[in-house]
Image (cartoon, rainbow, N blue to C red; front, side, top):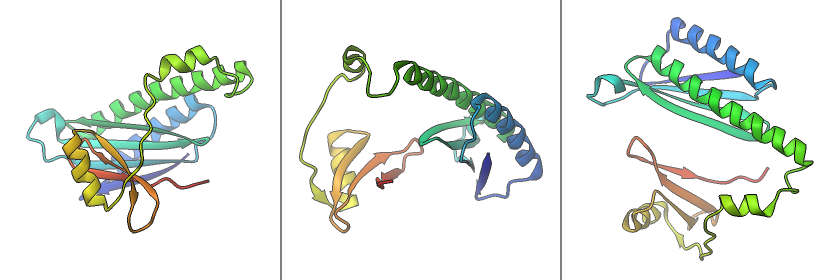
Length: 176
C-alpha cells in the first residue's frame, strides 16, 4: 500500500512515519487485497482542549471504494492508533459487504425489502445554477450540512458541505 503523508504546518518526523507504516501494514493484512493508495493528513488543532491538540485524517482507496476516518487526540501517536482502529472496523464492514455481494451473485440481485429499509426518503428537485458562495449561503439559510447545485462557471453538478473544522468543502464528481 502506498502511503502519502501530509503534514499541515509542520514537518512529519521519522518516528511518526514509522508508527504509521507499522499500523498500515496491519491494516493491509486485514484488508487481504492491495489498496491503491492511502492519504494521511496530520494537522495541529487550534483547540484549547487538552485531548484535541492534533488530528489525523486518513482516506484509503480500495477497489473503487473509499474508506475514510478522522480522529483527534492529545498527541499524534494516540490519534494514529485511534484512526487505524476506526479504519479496521470499516474494513471489516467493507469485507462483510463484499462477501454478501458475492453470496448474492451480484449487487443487482438484492432484495427490494432490504433496499427499501435502508432508504427512508427519495427527494427530487431541480438543481439551481449558482456560484459556490451562493450555494454556501443557501445551505446555511436552509440549515443543511450540504447543498447540491449546478456551478455557473463550469455547468457541472457540485456539492458544497460543512466540514467538522467549521470551514467548507466542495465535491465535484468525475466520471470514470
